[in-house]
Length: 306
Image (cartoon, rainbow, N blue to C red; front, side, top):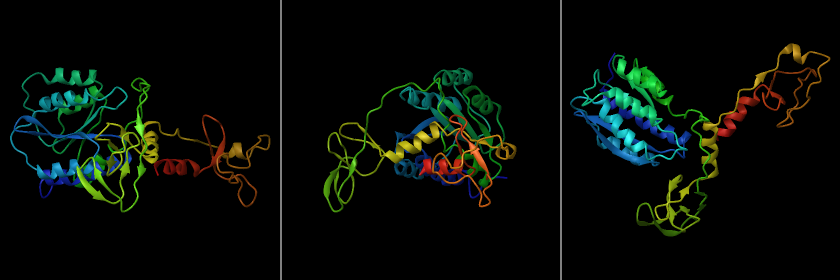
C-alpha cells in the first residue's frame, strides 16, 4: 500500500508532528534536518533548538528527485554530530523511501565510522526492507522498521520522540553553564536579540548580559549562555534517568500476620488500607523498600513529565 497523496506529503505532515513532540519531551535537545536528492546530501537546517525554524525550512523544500546516497548522508551527519560535546546523545533518524543507495565508496566503512563516533542510527522505511538499512541499525544500536501505512508510519516516528536512557559508559560528568532568566513585564519594550528588532510584550532577560530572548530554551545570542527553565530540566532528566519500575506486593505478603506492614504511603501518607481495614493493592520501591499505593508509580511518571 502506497501513501496518498504522495510520500513526501505524508512525510512532511508527520515530521512536523514529530518535531513538535520531540521538543516538548526534549526541551534541551537540538535537531538538524538533512535531505538526500540527486545522490547528494544537503543540510536543510543547522542543528538548533527552534521547532518553528525547522518546520518552516522543511515546508519550503518539499522536493525529491534523482538517486539516493545513504553514504553521503551519513558522512555529512557524522561531520555535524562530531561537534556535539561528549555529554550529549548523537542520534540519527532516517526516513528512507528509496529501494537502493547509489554511493561513491564503501558504505561499510562509513557505517563503522558512525559506530566509532557513537552515533545511533535508526531507519524508518517507506518501501520494502533493505539489508543495508538493517545492517546500519544493528551496527550502531538503532532500530529499523518499515511502515505499512500512514497510521503505522505516524506510530513509528513518534516512538523516537522520547530519548533513550543515558548509558553510563557515555555519561561523562561535565558541568554545563545554564541561566534561568526572569520573564519580562507585560507591555515592556526592548530589543529582541534573536530577531534584532524592538518588541512589545513579555520576553526573557538573560541573567548574565541582560539581553532579551523571545522563547525558552535557547542560547543567548549575545553571551552564548544556555537559557532554560526548571521544568525543561525536569522533563529532560526524566527521560535520561527514568524511574525504576516498582515491584508489586503479593497478596500473600499483605495477608501474612507475621509481617509488619506500613499503614501509610511513604510519599503522600495516604492510607494503604481499604475501607474494611484490609491492605489494598500496593507496590514497593526496589531501592528503599518503602510501600506505596499501586497507582503511585504512574502518578510519579506523570508528575515528572509536567
